[in-house]
Image (cartoon, rainbow, N blue to C red; front, side, top):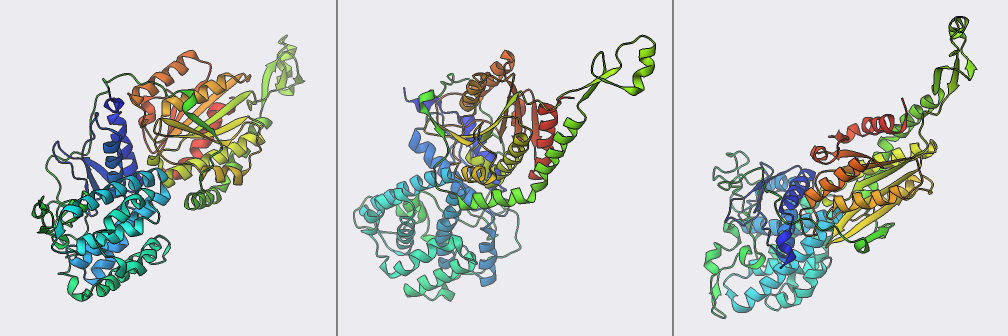
Amino acid sequence: MDSAFFTDVLGECRAMERLSKATGCTVHWLPEGDDQPRTCMKTKKVYLPRPKAKWGKHERTIWRASAHHEFGHHHPSQPPLVAAMRREGISFSSKMGGAINALDDIWQEMVRTREYRGAGQELDYMQGAMCKRGAEYLAKSAPSDMFIPEICGFMYKARAKWQGHVAKYVDDYLKHVDVAKWDGYVDRVNELIDHPEPAEELIRIVREMLEADGDDPEECKGEPDKPESGEAGDGEDDGESDGDGDAPGKGGKSGDSDSDGEGEAVKVSYKELMGHDHTESGTVPDGAKPLIEYDHSRRNYEPIPLDDFVVGVPKNPLQEGLDGLIHRKLEDNAKVSQRIGRYFQAASQNGKVYQQKRGKLTSKHLTRGMMGDPRVFNKRTERIDTTADVYLLGDASGSMGYGMFSTMACGMISLTKALKVAKVPVKIACFTERRSTCYHYLIHDWNEPANEEVMRDRFARCDLMQNADGDNVMYAYRELIARPSKRKILIVLSDGEPCCHHPGDAYNYLKDVTRAIVQEGRVELYGVGMGTKAVKAFYPEYALLDDESEIEDCIINIVKDKIIRS
């Protein structure tokens, strides 16, 4: 039986809900029969179809990529484009607005890819599939208006520079359209991600492309969108949302293109060529819900074999944006390590126990000695538990995003530096997973010096993909119990529930793993929820970190509870 039948549907859905938070939007699940992803920028709602347990890898990848695409429209880089279009009086439903929206898809996916390599891989796969689909469609149909096929061809030609899957099929697509007139704009579009004014530059590019096509840009603007309108769902044009219906400025209804006749002239829209469309209507689908419920009564989860773990220092290309963000947060939170250090210093100074029968005489207890009580001495004791091994295990899934992941990295680095000063052994690892292969990234090993630059570099080379929590918690547990230390502490930082490619119920498997570790009692297990309360379901001892400003208090509480004896 196809292993896709055992897909952890709930895990996939929860992962998408967490991913949406990284861009400030919320996921609403479409009713049965509505399979068109769409989004409304005004209400910051993304509408997704419910995944199916029996989907194969192709369907699941396209579904995830569609979600990444819709989330990309809510990235902080995107709203300025809407404002710029309003200033220019450009309607989303116009020919010019449609071209801007098309090129914006390239820009926002480049942003998404840079910030989350796992999303980039799936977006690459989806766009390659759409390029192939478009080529097959054009091979049997002759569009009456070539602008939409040409603008799609230009998009694929630009994407082929950085999306390898698109590059496989772009030549087949370009057999049917001539985009040589726009070749000079390919590099400019791909450089939008680093342009100081990307929204304004995008509009300039579209103006020039229309002129190269023999159009007057002013005549292609359409009627200006009204900035003041009803809420999404009232049928009015608010100019601020992006969906997947039929865009009037982009070739008409999809029904106009149903034809099997070779060479027959038809109208064509994005839906035929790309599998989805954009519209400014923002209509809320009937029956869409903000929450989803699935049961876990499917087959048991089969753990990922140890041979399928890739363990070691991450060797992926450095993600400069992530590296810079971690660096800035470390600078902003420089006092964290200092404050933890003061806690250690105070603990070592105050490490005394009184009323002892041997030790140093306590002068204030001499009266007790005169009454025959021998407990008039004090002894110095080590309150800092240097017999404990501390294993910090971090979630490197895509839903963490650059923001939460960099906060976690900052906290781990600060804690490690302080623990090293106190001579407490510590290790850092981050975990992610792709296609049933676990990546257990080594950030800091037991015997390494606490070098901030080295740790920061390794964090910034972690791929952020799926997350097989239970498998990696078990991997860390096995390593800890093999060490000779008296105490063993495993601290897991995660933003929610497991979501992996591996078949079965990963949610309940994580529960089984944490329950077994706690019951055995050889390792002290502690969970830290990064912006989520989900850790409550898995870790009996836990802390919640709702905001990055709380990282200092969270770390200090861990030190007080776990490392310093009362």
